Image 1 (cartoon, rainbow, N blue to C red):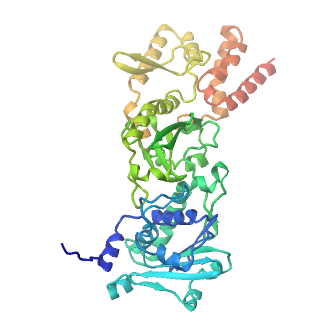
Image 2: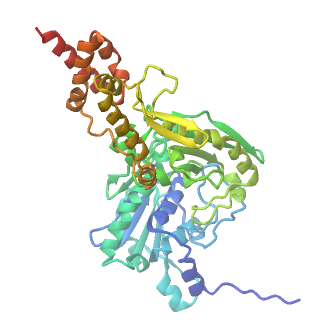
Image 3: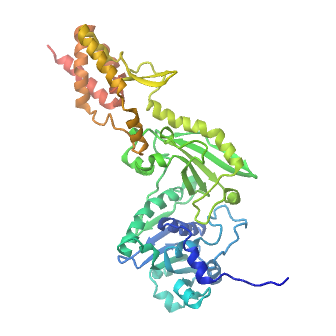
Length: 494
């Protein structure tokens, strides 16, 4: 049997690898993986007004000339090799594939032990020479590069330069428009993917990521800083001797979220879509917004988000791809997740079902009663609600019949399908109580208190229970002020 050495045809393979499917923001994230693996504490992304280049400068440990040459090789590391727990790479392709998916000229300059070295892939040169030609940059060439002056002043670090954009500009009026749009998307994306590094979780050093000197803010999808977020106990799954940690978080009902919290949670449009598992590998977010078909994505589970931490030693089981955007849980993990996912989702359903109410709290007077029967669930206006009961007591039989007909009409025509459709369109919440300010609640309560004062035998009884009556219990702080105003009104009467 004879053998033939058949290396890939450089121009064709390089152009094919550019079509792996990187977006602008995911390509930048791949470069930050290298910076973090190199021990960097700062990563500066810079570009000039004409967007002629994008520079990514970190203060990692840097690379010696021979190591830099090796790093520029396609497939520079074996994906089956054992790596340190903090290594975010795998295939040895990310730097090259991610960068060349966005530009035709990739230059990497690194500083280590006071030695500055540079290497460059120029796809136009590869095309002309029909071979894997890697350029070794001389000292004068290095000095002429943008951002190299900042690197030369440091003790160590690495600079990645993207130049000669072609695909990035496709579909845009200009390269400036393309870069600015990409940067806007990258700001949120990087803040989410690396949010645990930015905040310095678990006592780790903080990672500062800047874009033209503007720091990227962390995007915490679990809202751990919100007091109303429910954190369920952490659970462990052992696979091949390695530990996978799973912790679920139930976000507060959207009506309890501030505008900042909604942005941190992914925004109003993504509140529905981003429910499910968040898969982290060495604290770096790989994948999110899926239940892996263990349960269906639904409106009532959209507040459930589950953090799953996997070590890089299990990469081979999770089928992680080059872009680090795909992760498929192995059978052993799926079985364990399926046992806990139901109780996780139930917590989210409970927040929506009760909207913060204590279901056993009999002191509350709800405006609506939930009725469960063989034919399903129905909602009926609570006839014992003080407003309804007081009005009923003042009506004649004919008027009472009209009131009953009105309530039954409202109940029968409740637009359940439309309500569900509005929620399913990822709106943060239906703001039925948004207009309930102090004056409105005061005008609702005033005739109720007057009726109790005249006919029931005193206003103290209704004032004492008013904060337990809907809609007043929805705005407890405002309700206290309304009660104070009503009490003053009574005291000032002759």
